[in-house]
Amino acid sequence: YCGNHRAPPKDKPRVPCPVDPTHDIFLCDVEKHVKICSKAKQRRAVEHAGYFSKDANLHGSCSKDDGEGEGGWAATGSAADLSSAARRAKLVALDAPAFLSLVARVKRAAAAALPLVPHPQEAEVLRPEACRRWLAPGAAERSHLASRKFDRKHVLQQASIIGHLIKAFHFDACLVPAKAERNHEHRNNGNNSDVSAVELGAGKGHLGTMLMESLSLPHLVLLDRGAFRFKADRALRHNNNNGDANIRIDRIQCDLKDFVLGRMESLQQRRALVVGKHLCGSATDMAISTVLDNATAKRDEDGSCGVLGLLGLGLSPCCHHRCTWESYTGKFWFTQVAGFAPEDFQLVAWMTGWALCGHKPCSATAQQQQQDAGVEDGEGEEE
Image (cartoon, rainbow, N blue to C red):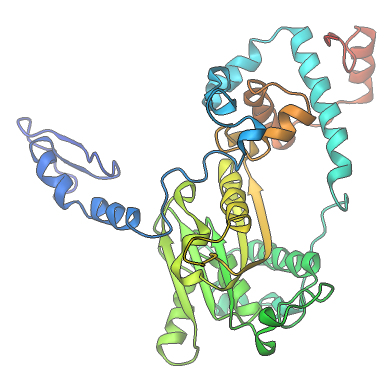
């Protein structure tokens, strides 16, 4: 057997590394190893970076007036985040009247939230002209998007996200909102040299890379807490090293909960176009928090003001059942507008998974049987 698979001697047991449990070490070497572990060195380097702030995006960007802080929502013991198994068990433990009351309140909240959506409509798949080069048959396989696990559906999704950004913010060729009043400082002589593409939760960076190339941007920031092989941005780096492009790529390995967008040195005095695809659960809230915190940040004493401006934000969330109350950005709406209690969040978050669980809509016959049995919307609801 090789060293990785040979059984350790009984007198020298192995344990997971305290810094990074993905690898193990001899128990007798723990104290020595934590001082030289490459993961520990990497973590210390990140913690000393200007953009790092421990748990900066964990509290949903709520002000004290919204109830956050000492004695507020964050300190509510009953609102402590639960595991998926605990959430399910809590929901199953509800009796029929309590469950039906919860369902009725969810339906009322959804109806109240619908007018807040600017253009409620069916899903619209866009194919922007800026992404045509990747949509032709066989084109993507010859680009940075080619990989061992290439799937054309991801190309179509990324192109549609970019198309919605262009459509929603009315961008023209210079990435200046065409319908907005143009500020001379932001026009920058009609080019995009002061614009940066930022992908949060980037993974291999396919979306950010396509965005950068589609809109001819000179700067790309890719943020993810993990390290990946076969990264999409390697093609951009190769072209840059060969003199075929004049671009800058910053790949940052940092947890999104600790990332402060406005403190990143390479983004100072620039305009940012921020995107994210498959930001799982609370990662979407963390992304919103770091963007909003930068947008509302006041000037520092030295006159610096972080990112010059936010051009647009496009996020594609997933796994809503993994959202957490700690990082949730909609605490005020959830409690003050929708009328839920903080502890209800655990149940409502778990219920969001029902939309994609594969259950078919209730048939007319089943609905009639429920009505005959006295089970109707809102029954059991407390006044």
